[in-house]
Image (cartoon, rainbow, N blue to C red; front, side, top):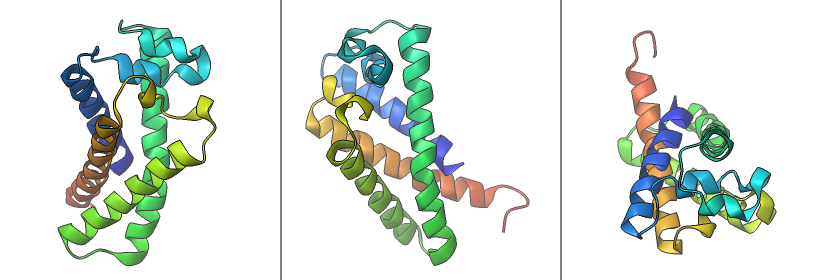
Length: 146
């Protein structure tokens, strides 16, 4: 749940951030398909399967991947407050950014750097953190959860 909500929150933020910087709303998600289509994927602003579907699926898979260490941390630490939960989500998102842009080969980065400013990318990782925290709270609130 936390990964799904985080992926959706970050995707919405990416669209809004792109529009605020004068780019097309779909460009950051389409750019994520650059692992398959090369850097020209960032130029695509059309809604299409090769760019948008591949980019969105890749983006969502990445969000779920980063939710795994977050959920492991959450299960072990059992944060009691919303602040503690948000700190854990922010830490996870910061690690994701460091790995995505510091360790990962360029071809496998999220591709947002091809479209967005660094400031917008930081905001997108902030949205990822908020999504992780909100998704975790949402999962706790579901019937049958303890």
